[in-house]
Length: 170
Image (cartoon, rainbow, N blue to C red):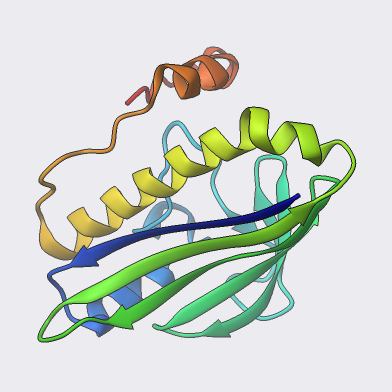
């Protein structure tokens, strides 16, 4: 099964400001883009550098390409059956306006042909939208409408919330 998901947010900010968000991925408490709290943090064994390995929760990957302040691509190494990549890119959109885009492109095989459409797809979409909210707040200080989790995402996330004691429901 082929999967291609694009999430993007038009931000009233300079490309350099938006690009600086990407550069904070996997910096622990200093990460200004990846949503913390209810979501597993991104950890990379050598930080944000080509060849660095890590992931978030059960999703594992390596940094395949990185242009500071502009673009980062992660190639999947797990879970089993995920073949492809996800990436963040900063795209100019006019005077002091920039698009922050997240793209996931992969094909699924084996068990992922079921786990992707039943679980990962929905939590992936919620996680990315939470991250775009976080990026918008970091760059502009405002958020017109906060992304809300669907009832299904809240159901899927319930075991993690019970384990960590962090509600994080949106």
